[in-house]
Length: 127
Image (tube, rainbow, N blue to C red):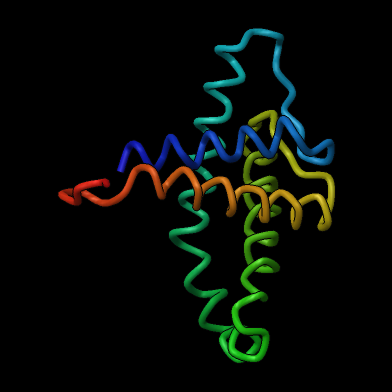
């Protein structure tokens, strides 16, 4: 579980580093940036755990029609919601707009998928 949390923090950090519309304002110390990204990952995890099931349930007809591609829109909305929560809590991280959130959600999804494929599940043997 901790490893998956760190994977999420790493994928959010990569999206922050690569996409100009996702920003992190820190004092120049790498430790501050790392702690901020861990806080953002915790907020993102809570938002995904609490809000995403509701979004998926409400938009299930759209998910069926689009063969699941609407999940990208849901993930972008959750990334924007994470940005809003960070702003409310004074965490210096944010997303500028919907398209930045869309590309960020796509990047976070891909990087998380790839990194989690190396982590695997408990008790499984990797070959």
